[in-house]
View 1 (spheres, rainbow, N blue to C red):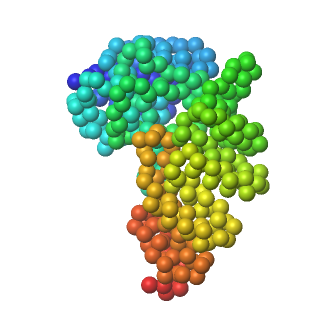
View 2: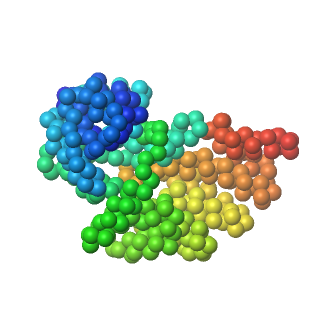
View 3: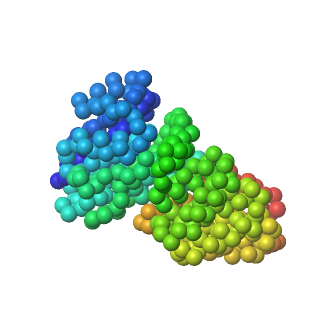
Length: 358
């Protein structure tokens, strides 16, 4: 059975760290904690779980810090987690089973990363990340921000999920600040970093600059397909916020030049036509979203609700606007079967009950 070093980089995480380590400490064979300048009880808490606590001078480079943490590992595989991550109890048996059954030629284990949740705690945003990485010099993090280990070798996809459960907000400007610093130093961002730089500009409501960066990224003949499709969605929202609706629709449709339509983009196209009161066309795109398969293993961001709940709810709206309230109610009922706690479903249910639609 392979051995695993949990490798963490932390700073001022006294609120989260014990919860994270409690969730996984008994499942791993070694814990490495690299502190990047805490002024709270983080180091004290880490020392209750491991003697391997190291100090690292922060250099505005997440890859450098993570590579330092990996350099201290002595087990077969390195596993990373952030302090505000947690392995839920439902995942622990699967974790142990994977350790016992893992083939020795496995280089990287990809696991789900759930980073947003609905009101019932069901994941509403997830994607696969490299989680166990063979401990050898071939596998190193790259990228000062939104760091990644390029996937090479034999990959195994697991349905084990790590949940990102932040209890307080961090520094919202940190990533953009690091990108600005790199550019000011004359550094060139690779295509992946260009994409994430554009996203950071978008998060900071710098829509015109975000569009400029992302459109340039889309013009490149290289770049990861998933990033290009997601860039279309981000670009579209920038155009909406700039009052350029036609440009928003064009870039959404452009996403299909990279691959078959994603349900996430179909929902955005449907939203465009719904807001422009073209209900039949909107319904077409929401129906298309319902029939698109999830491409979890492609590695892109996945919004699970775009494959069932959102298009069902929006089809209810479309057919109500068209005047076919019986069909509208059927779609709402289907949405309710998925999320009976949904406020939107319950509001619609009351609406149809008042109309005595059966």
